[in-house]
Length: 455
Image (cartoon, rainbow, N blue to C red; front, side, top):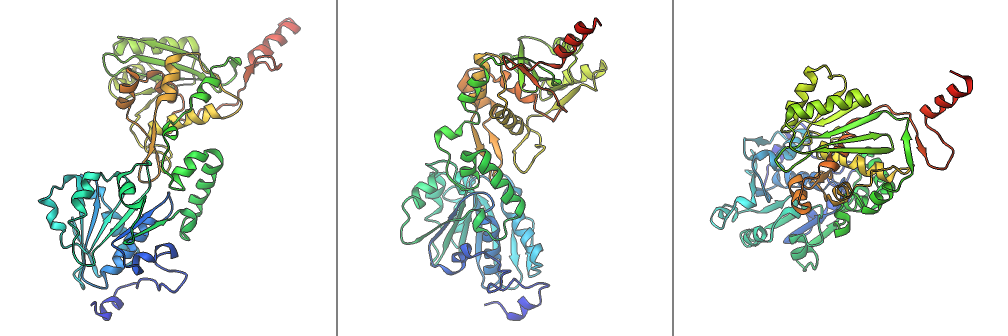
């Protein structure tokens, strides 16, 4: 048992559970009090599962000597684990009885040790190091395979040992959910916790949740309520919104022209230009077999012919060479380079720029007035074919381009070109000219004035 003096000599004691500043919320007290083999917490973003698990384990590790294993399916480095979270909580509470080492955390007084492992790297022999574990914390349990669980579960065999599981459900058939939570036995404590159960959930997260609930109910259920994705909800963009956008309804717009340029990376890919003025996407230009100079020549022709406000171009792979040629020719004020895999502008919501741009397409299609797309079947397949998922932070992530390419039998070049037109905001106070409603574009208005006054 830990010496009382050892606790009181730390700079800040852990908060009193009886106070409103309690270390863990009411929903997480069973972590400390229930005597169960498996403690299974699931739910959506903002529920505080990771923080509550980390705080509870740090507290327990100050009471008695324990071996605590922090596990996940894949851990290529210590940075992939909850190591940083535990370090941050130690710092937050000024727990100077904990010693942070390069690959583990130890308590100087009780001798408690935290270790970190990826289960996919473990076989029956390697995993024997976990036989003395008191508590195993499985983070991101939705990624754990049936094979990993069948190796791990009999290894955590010490009398009184526990397995703590935190999960944001991904699919109906997530292996651990099916094996443990779908029909829990008497040794399993099951608890759903969402952002509204967490008294420490920041106000900004609550605002984001309510915004998502009103605008994207299906996403709200998955991201914020922890409901699994149904098969139909795996699509980022519904085919209905794409088909509605292909119905002719406008033939002009006063909005500035933005061009998206997706440059071919491999032999069977195509270089695609997408032309969009606000709510009106009016042209796709596709080329096969062009080298960098030829793509740059075509882009330069479009700049001189159409005077776009911006050309957003993919600069991964061959794109960097095209960008350099155009910049050397004096088009630096117009062109902007974009890496699909780079950090999103809104990093709290999107996994990368690719997800951010494609989701902007989805919002554009669902917004009013209804937009217009070219009647192009390949574009329709690109837009309605891509699947979505969410990372452990609840950020939108798209399936890899290569996966979509396998299903389509080609690269989604046209969809990527349209997505690139949403890479960054472009100032836009224009309006489309809609058929039959008496609204005209700015150019028509001035043409009429010129004719009336003999200009």
